[in-house]
Image (cartoon, one colour):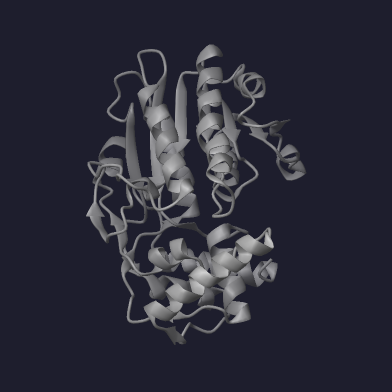
Length: 332
């Protein structure tokens, strides 16, 4: 196998790269940034914009498998920004992959593509896309996923994986935000809300991609389908957050703010950030508020059946690995 990975400099993309290398796969990375740490591992690195059709096509040449993990995932930016990366970029990569004779295309989707504002409790892949999306990210990831699944055919097999809340050792969006906020004591519980949520340990999220690529072929059960991926062990939201904080040697969250007060604060901060044109995200926004006060857990039976997926660690074992990483890296 020779694989192209997009976003190999990111948290999940980097884990996929390392897993592929460990299995003897020749890896090429395609990203906008420069990642000398990947070159040091023997990865061929190409720089370019996903939405640049020529660059995307060149990145696919000579590869038989594509792992498309790159995306615009933050909450800042216009819908056009999200559409360019997540939709136009995926479209360009699909076109380049088919032109280059790539056989397998593994897409990193998102479970947020089915969120409709209500509690998600044990949903499986039959859950439809909502009529209205809660963010430009969710909307554009849904559009990209549909492009990927519709591209599946006799000579080009595609699959989409939807890992939920990926966490683990290493600098990453979820753990870093929780720990940084914990250090600054910005975190607070919202009323009595403590709904069940699914999470995915980083090694298992990467392994799900590897398993999918191994099974992906014309007519395979997984071809042209999407799959939820997690540890299959939903826990109360604040229990997970406090476990991550404990791994970093920080105190649990005990402060409580009512939902109306939290909503007013989120709206005010969003407005202030937008008017001031700050480049970072506000401490809280309405999207995050909704995520913190609704349940999000899924039935992963299909991934177990069609991909041979099963979590390799428990949440407690993953937290121990995270603690070791914090202890050895000083939290950096």
